[in-house]
Length: 287
Image (cartoon, rainbow, N blue to C red):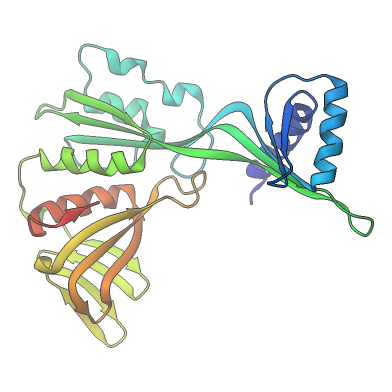
């Protein structure tokens, strides 16, 4: 963990320590834990709550924190770098968005689509476990992060047509699927080859199919064998904003199994979506 993240966590610990003295705790004897809300309480109630927390051995809680935002590489964003008010202008061009929102730009090269993605945190959580005569108590406090997305589509002249802010990744994939499907068809050769690394080795999307390079040779999975395409939740939301994970499912078992999972940059995901819209069977399930 670099110094920037350490200092942020340190500030959170201090903030939680102050909040602990000015918030209310609800303890559940049956569950064996306490839950804290940000409501003021009297010193007498606070003393009683602390005694109950010690008796129950553990406490957990959440608290409101100053908003923080992080960009593609996990760097902290300034408010002016995610100021979207200009999008309400009567005419907005793709170049305007690319310049003003460069810190959240996923690098999508599609001239008719802009995809901005960043992580935001407004809350933190903490937990503590009381110690005994032989050992001291333990605890920790961290921020909770949520992904946010901006999808913008443009007409042939590069003028903004529609914009949508999306926080749910399931809605994101559905909307991205619809936006790309609405575009006119293009030749697969214009997409170029998409190179990714999977657990078996390099994977390349070609007009002929999905090619996986193994130690013993190459395996080609033709497009008609694709039956489902699914998505996984982002694992590290404040350090890997740009990376998302997905999985192909095949109609039959191949040399690499009946499915293939991979993680890729957001820009590559757009190209993969475009590839699937052109190459995959019409009945393939999008999840």
